[in-house]
Length: 234
Ligand SMILES: [Zn+2]
Image 1: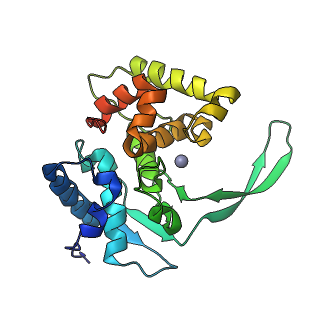
Image 2: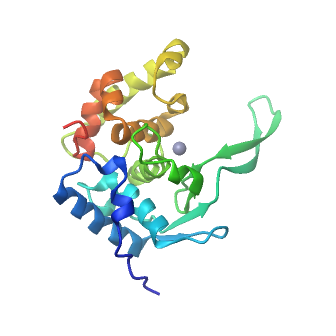
């Protein structure tokens, strides 16, 4: 069944996150978000989803690809919304053969072919220019997958050489991984988990708090501005 797109985007577009966009960009964003809603099913087993909730998710999801296009989300078919942070039992076996069992707490999750899981509590907290945005975080994981693996490097346009990507991201990642730096930085320490989380977290900061990313890692800011073809500071 083809769902009709909601016509009222006023709540979504009123988010502080979109304040910097021009009228033309806002129109394009809404058009892209409406297309996104026709392609990606947003469902929940636990909460009744309204049009306003769907528009809030879709508008933020398409911001990173505003100037790239929806083809970057090929293969993204479903979003499952859960009420809040979710927990999952994880069993890991370490190099010494010791089994560790723990509970993994998460607010969002992306799998190669599976649905993107989003916590509604965290969607509601996103879009306020404080550097935190679970929708953009998970969208960045989808973009990361475009070259085939979640390694912090998406498919690159011709004018960005893989070596340039590795050098710029690698330098910032190495810097942020130093314990002393991590304590001082205003960027979420979760970015230092691995290359994929680094890309997702710094993409959140790029769109939500561009001044912060530009202050701490200006080279990375400029690289992302070229990659996303957006200059949130401009
Ligand atoms: Zn992540």
